Image (tube, rainbow, N blue to C red; front, side, top):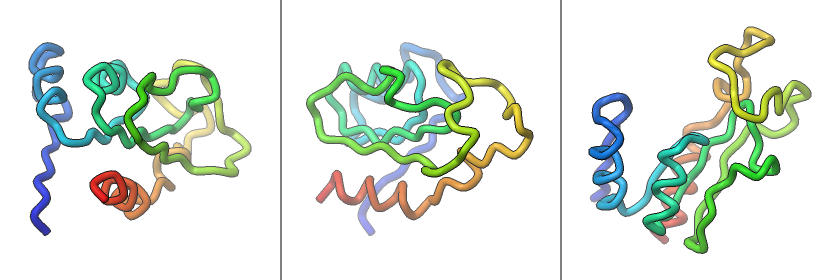
Length: 112
């Protein structure tokens, strides 16, 4: 396909992670500080939203086109403004039911 994907989850400290983001063509990330660092570098971002929602104001502040991916229609979502380390309902549907193909489609759309 010609695309290079790199999973850096848990491999680098904050400064090293920021350096990787600076060089990335696009960033797939959940709602974390690294999402905001990517926004500061004006990177296209595919942000993944689980137990929080962008309507709480935590979305990436950027003018660069990006995408939000979330599981819509869950009655238990949002369950937190800042997120939990474990699902209060025990099923974690907000992430487990997120479709990988939907994420890939958004990445491909941004490369368009």
